[in-house]
Length: 299
Ligand SMILES: [Zn+2]
Image (cartoon, rainbow, N blue to C red):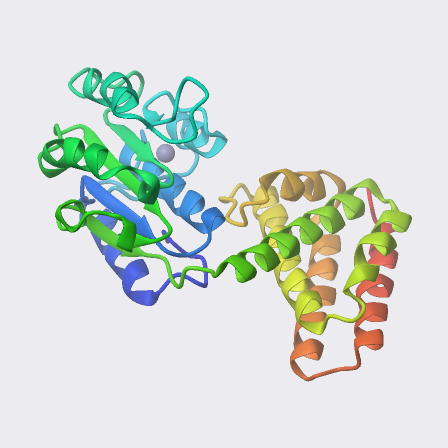
């Protein structure tokens, strides 16, 4: 299933899956809202659907295994063209759009049958650039997909939005929430890396600051569950979804499936105990003490 991440609205998930099943993926797409990591993940899934060399017959459901899918996941597929600012500037200029997009628009893809032009941070595109893109977005060449990732859809011209199929990914995070979200992800990554390295001291060091913060402990545990799921997925050859590929692969290289299941069970306990308002000291003890013994199973 595409767009499996829990936080994605059901309507969006249904729309994307129906479109890929019927091989009717729209050519001009906007992914709006959600976190940056979620937008990037969904963009990869759409790029795979557009470029996959071995989709399920009659569909655009990507296989996740072919050379195209693998390159998309690794961020190295030459037919995914990210429009980037040049010359040390922070935002894309009209010249960047001309050189990176308009001059290549009608050239054949390099490896796949299709190609994707990807605008990350599309809400930062000037009205002038958005206007310059109107015509291409309205009638893209047959083998082209446009993908606009934006946090605040309000920053995009309605004339552009009306020509795009929008897949909302959920509420946009406030600045404060985003910082918190990043802190949680960073901590979860560090704990996963500590588990992979077998470094109990670092594990203790990374869990300690959460002592007085029940919500952060629960969120970090939830993020660790996603990373562990990815490590398990790596063992079974399935797709990674957490956005923390590096840490998931590290865990997969050091722990077999039963040990990973133990880590996941420990984190499940944290999440449910935090929801039941368990004492914070108890939670912290649970956090580090249930992970330490699993470390003994490290390969
Ligand atoms: Zn594929």
